[in-house]
Length: 197
Image 1 (cartoon, rainbow, N blue to C red):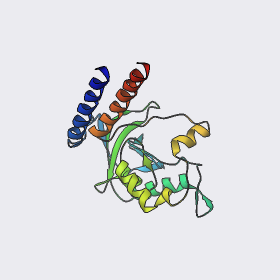
Image 2: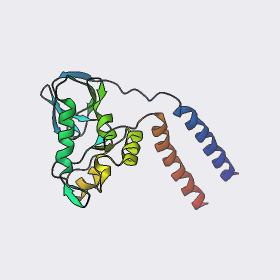
Image 3: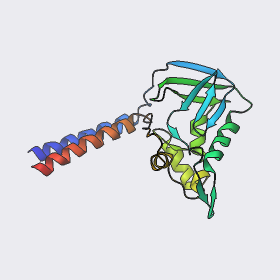
Image 4: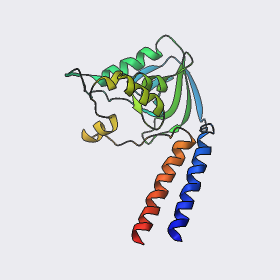
C-alpha cells in the first residue's frame, strides 16, 4: 500500500504542477530601483549610480574566458561585455533590485529602452540561463547564435576550473520551475524510501 500511496501522491503532484504552470511567475520583492546611464563591467554586471548590479537569472562568460568558434579561439568574455555595453549605450537603464548576492552586489532585472537586458543577452547567445530565461536559451541554441555558434564551457564550470568563487543561480523562472525543483527533491526521497523497502 505504501508504494501505491507514493504513486498516487506523485500523480497529484504532477496535476498540481500542471495547473501551477498556468499561473504567472511569482513576483520577487523589489528592494529598490535605480535609473540612469549604465556601464557594463562584464557580460552580466552593470555599474549604475555608483553601484554594481548583477543581472539576475543570467550567467555570461568571464573576462579572460575564451571559447571556440569555427575552429578558432575567441575572447567570448570580452565579446559578452561588449554586447552588454552596446545594449545599454545611448539610453536610460532602469534596474529593479531584489536584494544582494553573497558578494554584496545588488541583484536586479534591468531594462534599457523598454527591453529586458538579461533576456536579450540570453536570446542573442551572449549569456546562458542561470535561473531564468530557459526558453530564450533553448532558442539561441537552436539558432546557433553567440556562444552556441561554437564550443564553450558554461561560465559556472569555467569559474570552478579556474579557481574562481562558486556562485549559485539567483532565481527560478516561475512557479513551474520552483515546483520542478521541489518535485525532484521529493522524488529522490521517494525512490530512496522505495529502494530501502
